[in-house]
Picture 1: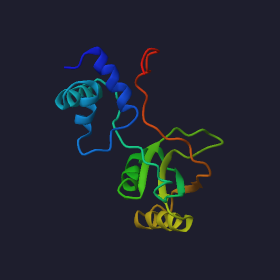
Picture 2 (picture 1 turned 120 degrees about the vertical axis):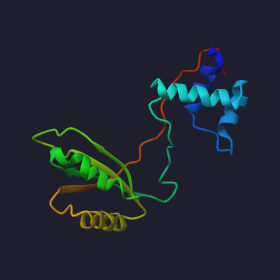
Picture 3 (picture 1 turned 90 degrees about the horizontal axis):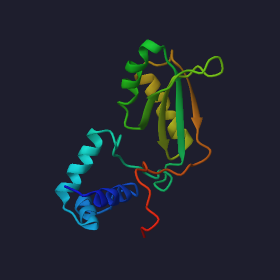
Picture 4 (picture 1 turned 60 degrees about the vertical axis):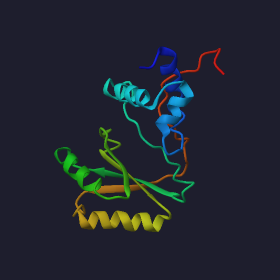
Length: 165
């Protein structure tokens, strides 16, 4: 089991991302003076207790060459959101899909999905393929291409104390 200081140190470490090594949990454990099993156990406990909502990966898609990024917004009947979302997330190019409330009368769209591509023509063709394959021609949608890349980072769980290095 990790003591309080080790837990705080672990929170500081994980918010910077996992080390890119074959055994990242063992690397974290070494940095806080513990063992890999204890690190895995506390991370599992934090997830189960909702201290950590999700444990994921943040990719810089621009560095990977994906510079044509589009948010597709859909005006889906409320009772069909789950079924349409299930169709959309079945496509490997859809990297994010979620529902948001409408903001009537200005904004009627309630389902959002993100598609990353290397150029706009490919992204638009991909969206057309999705619409055709899933018979979504009757669902109004708009394609909104990104014009600015915001800094992406994971969650923040701890603040370094004034005396910490």
